[in-house]
Amino acid sequence: MKFERPEIREADIITCAACGHNLGTMASIREKMNKAYQQLKRPSPARKLQ
Image 1 (cartoon, rainbow, N blue to C red):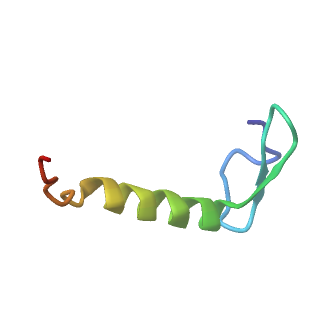
Image 2 (cartoon, rainbow, N blue to C red):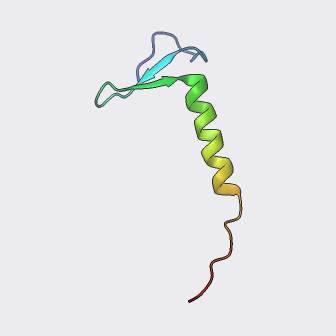
């Protein structure tokens, strides 16, 4: 990714380098990634063998 400033701000809008799709602000992306990481850390429920 190419940024105008050396540091990224929370309000910066991030776009996909390949297709130009708007991914959202840095803050919203960080929030989504943290939520996904928390789901990965949570133990999954035991599966029943059939």
